[in-house]
Image (tube, rainbow, N blue to C red; front, side, top):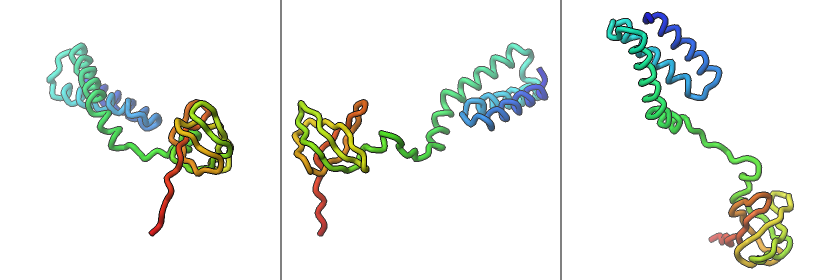
Length: 146
């Protein structure tokens, strides 16, 4: 294949990457550009060698550079839905013992909760985790102001 054909393949993969933004097709486009440069310099004699080099560069980019780029572009995702409850404070509506569920109110919603420690009614709690539709809660530390 000619270098122009490899450049066209790179443009197509680049366009697909723009629409998908998954950082998969970017590496295919870069690999195609490298093969196009090598083909333009007449370093690659046949299609088989070009395809092999294309596959090699693609694999190399995906395995070693994609994870680094994903870390660089990693945004601070905000927890949503139930996961957003972890760390939230609430109030215990009915006593909770290690072997019995109780009710807690967090962000205005009543939840079934459990705890490895005994928590009495009207005690301030903090959500430590989630198990299915039940909240794992702990007694909240009292905040003292100086």
